[in-house]
Amino acid sequence: MRTMDLAMDLAIIGGGPVGLEAAARAARAGLATVLLEAGEVADHVRAWGWLRLFSPFGWNAGPAGLEVLRGQGGELPAAEALLTGAELRTHYLLPLAAALRSRVEVREGARVRGVARADRLKGEALGQAARAEQPFRLLVEERGEESRAETEVFARAVFDCSGTYGRPNWAGPGGTPAIGERSARRAIEYRIPDVLGAQRGRYAARRTLLLGNGHSAATTACGLGALARAVPGTRFTWASREAHSVPLRAIPDDPLPERVKLTRRANAIAAEPPPGCEWLSRSRLLAVRQADSRGLEVDLEVAGAVRRDRFDRIVATVGYEPDDDLYRQLQVHACYASLGPMGVSAALLAAQGPPGDAPADCCIDPDALGPETLRNPEPDFFILGAKSFGKNSAFLMRTGYEQVADAFALLGWNAARATGAR
Image 1 (spheres, helix red, strand yellow):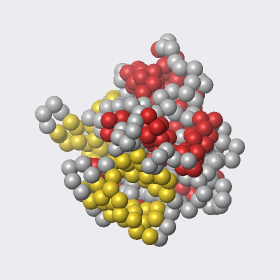
Image 2: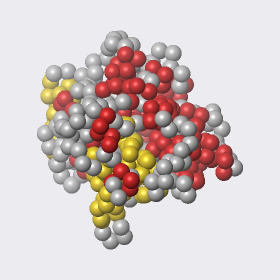
Image 3: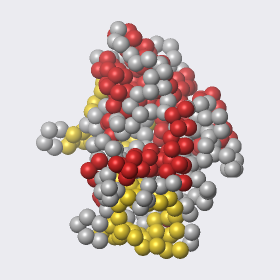
Image 4: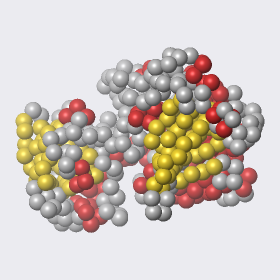
């Protein structure tokens, strides 16, 4: 039997919100589908579960996912509810995954190590539709109780919905590691810490260096500010690279009130920090060394001068980037600036406009992107969700859900069909 005859219709990489939405659409269309998740479903959402979303539930639930759950008769959050990540996972994502398991093959503990054509090299049939005559081959490392085993999956189409949360940027100059950062990586927190909750003990009565100038850094600054006022000896230095009068510039006509409030609170902390705390602009991390069992010695460049200091903790909220190793053997046209697929990156640049005094609106209208931006030179391979934005942090879940619908339209899969590939 030919490899194509053994292939699934669709392989989805990543069991987060966008991957589950794709699985819900596939189930509705009767497609033979496998969803491959390296950990457990919605693992990344669990990692930031304590955070409350800026956007309402109605923005963070996909239409196909809602259809599945309403068909089950379960109770859903109100469309206007502002949920935490944990609440979104508990009340929407996990029930959706459970409802899909009888219709879609969901494999947790299955990490995709590479995607290629079954019998075509990267440089063969350049940009030709003939590449689709061979199915995709996915090399999958599956975690068992005592060991790991490698298997392969064949599919006619692949959606890479694996996101970027597992790939934080380096905190050093130009996005490369600072001197000593690689060896000190275990002592640096690259995600937003729960400084007022589960991780309070790591930051209370300690001195923290906070790096970053986005909303993640602002969230951490507000938490550290509250902790400094509540616990004596809690201090922090907030260092951001841009040379502005405030760490966060307001988004004009921002449609998300909670984001507006965060911007104001963070800027107020920078203007009047608690005793022993400070905000530094025009700053970058040059070097970090483990000074002893607890402390870190840091070299910061601040307004052109080098400053050596000592901290107990470093939080580097400096963004994320996509893992492009997965599709190195496919013909994917990536943006040299964002590392995202070129079509989406170009559309984002056009939608956000040229750099200027006003910050770009992070609520890009999904219609500003459009289905054609998702096409790659590689037929039937789509990068969807946060990964499609590359290093650009403007992604919202509702944009990913729109991308899923667009990819199905491009594949001609909006009408129900079943191939019997199982």
